[in-house]
Length: 239
Image (cartoon, rainbow, N blue to C red):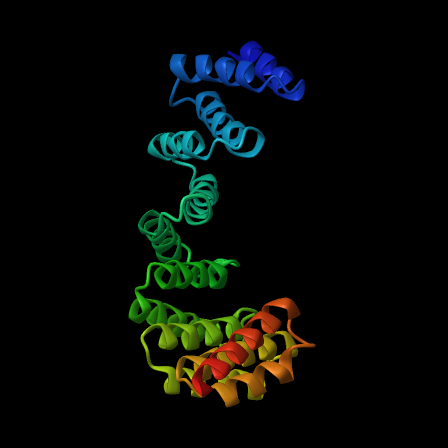
């Protein structure tokens, strides 16, 4: 088996990815729960994921690894990778929520716990489960009141309130960010606040806010499009 593993590694080094997968699979088939077999299974998943971009096959291979592995550290990294794959590649928010929830439960004191909680909140938000998203972001704030993602969580709470149609509450939330956060977060909160005023049909206030942030927003062209849209709406109103 060691010789076959070295051969598979050499094939991978030579960018013969399918041939490498075949050799690693032979090792897995002969000794699926051995240390070498588990390493080979993880290699198969990583080749599918990182070298070939075959996300569906990678997910199945990672899941197969988790079914047999007892290595908590490796399992945690694989769970995180699975969550990211499901979240980013397939918009499979139910699976992503399941993966992130398990990681948050099992690793509440880890270095990246704040990031995992934030990702869980985002998954709930993108699934339009706004109340659940708010609860998760509040949990993040409670556990990491001075965390690096604190103000991103505050913005996401405002976005979730807006998603619920509670624009006035969302504006108050964005004002909190504008008053206390760093400039990058302030710009995002101002954009979201202006969008709320647009949603409330207060076009003058929305246009004023967009005008103020246009030069400081990460993508000024997006702000410009918003301003043009408001101009057209105001012209249509006068007809």
